[in-house]
Figure 1 (spheres, rainbow, N blue to C red):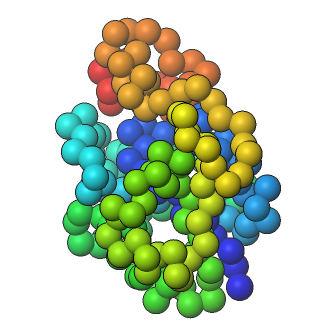
Figure 2: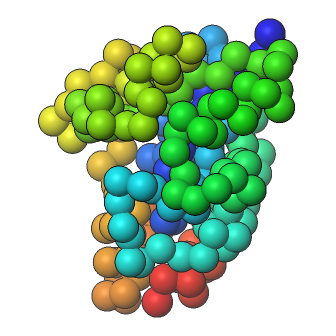
Length: 179
């Protein structure tokens, strides 16, 4: 059985912190792959600055070129909206019966996990890896970069440099899309 971690998010845009976290979890947890599940809509967030789904997915694909074991995934684009993790995991399990899916979430999400749709079912059927985020702790100790998609969008709109915050391969596109 292949062990796949699902790292969901809007990735608006993907940044070096996302990539570094996925790589660290891949190694530390003995996984076969980490799938960055680009979400079309988070039911707990209404992000008014959300770039079009396909553009965020394309940025993630480009950013992950050459990153072994980590890939961008647009699976949720074909599912009903809003995107509920439980629904995604149900469909993935049906479509990939030889895979074990593990959920990768931040400590901030873990602190509010009981508000997720069918959270008990998720716990019953899937392992969860929690990474530290902000003041919240996690189940793994991974180095986190102090970078956020919100800060990147702010810097782009202010005409500031985002070098080193997003992979070099997507700097120009991020500047173009988020201006």
